[in-house]
Image 1 (cartoon, rainbow, N blue to C red):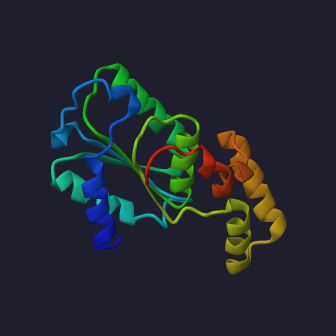
Image 2: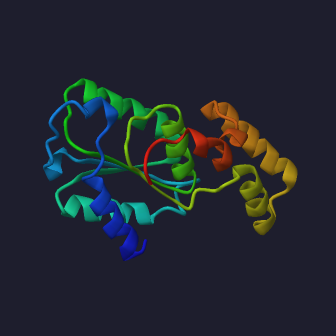
Length: 173
């Protein structure tokens, strides 16, 4: 990850104020700032998220890395933390399919004012086709993989298209 992304993420992490916490006085201490980093497909192409999380942790922030498939659990955790009185800032940073997962969560009401999304595929189906061609994966195998992932996570890849999600996003990027 470039130093620009690290600087942007550190700067933005203190600016997040979920709608659930807007009427409370925010506690802006670093330990009260929760940073959730979402990896992309397979997790191996987003290993820089570990280094970014470590930079946050070294600066005193609470930072954890998750796979994109954990997006629903992260959303539930954020909501539960605020219901239990968390008043600090919340930052969610997503890469690739992790960014797509964060966009879906935002479109479905995750109460964040700002997020960091980078390298989100604009069309997951088209990207998976290119990925399969680059790696000599037969189309029938790619289709089977797509179907299995859609069934497992309960979301169709067509629903991850940014042109469909963007009009429903209210958080500033």
